[in-house]
Image (cartoon, rainbow, N blue to C red):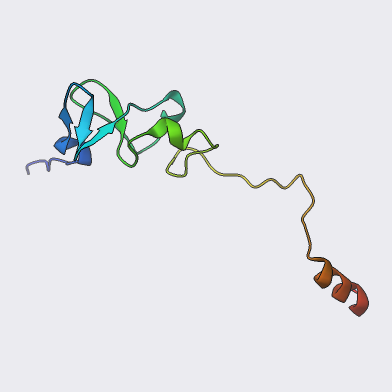
Length: 96
């Protein structure tokens, strides 16, 4: 049987003077935090690019990238949970 060629979105990208361009959008190379993600693909031009987002560095600027497949988001359980004061008073009145 013949192997099927897996096509990606980066197959339609063209290398220009501005960089790798896909549908008029210039793609930036991934940063070191993206290493290990399943969405990172290498291009024939010699760079690694994200198939989900054009500017991976900006996705990591506010914390963890929401497209990252290699990082799990964790809840901050160290702080106190804020409870609505009205609900707390009703619970206290019922004896809970």
